[in-house]
Amino acid sequence: MLRLSQADRNFLIDLRNYGVLTDVFPTLIKNANGICIVTCADGDHFDNVYSYHRNMMISQGLTPRIHVLSSHGGALVLPLRSSLNKNRRGDNLLEMMRETEELKDIHTFALEAHAPCGAAGLAKLNIYKQFQLHRQADAIIQNQLPGAQVICFFHALWENNRERTYFFSGINWRKFLQEKGDEIKKIEMACL
Ligand SMILES: [Zn+2]
Image (cartoon, rainbow, N blue to C red; front, side, top):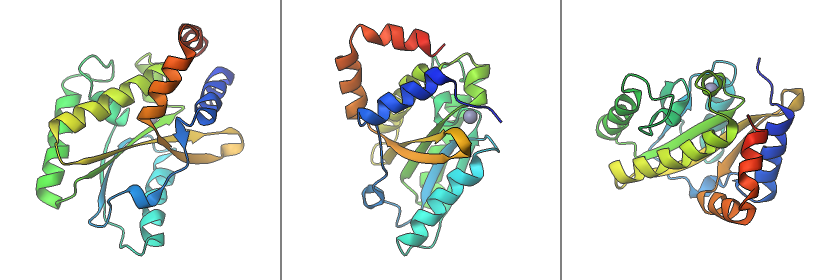
């Protein structure tokens, strides 16, 4: 199983400290009629990702109704210039998301990015670029599927196999970028 590098771990801790990665507030998620998780297919983490949503619905008194769209890199295939968007994978995923709304009447999409992500590594995406693509994917869906609720999650594998799921806050990501300013290049280089 892949492990986080020290630089990636430091980056994620920084994001936690800045409130970019926050605890999950289940009450904000409109999942009463089910949820579609758009996730990386990685079999080392899928059980935890799926169980997380299943347990959350059960704890909310709901019957789990989870529609899964998985591909290598999950929603990071959506942006046109993403190196994970090979052979129109982004278009195909978006089409399946449209079908999910039509077929299942599910309009809440949980975008699950994660680290360490083998698919992202294969596509030469460092962890910083993964966060950038995650934001872009969010914007694409908001634009293409008006009325859908899009929630960005991030799943991290820490030391001792501790797996944790966080909300990824777009507002605090923008603040983080502004406050870090010139330091961002250095941070990105460290994540290579
Ligand atoms: Zn992955």
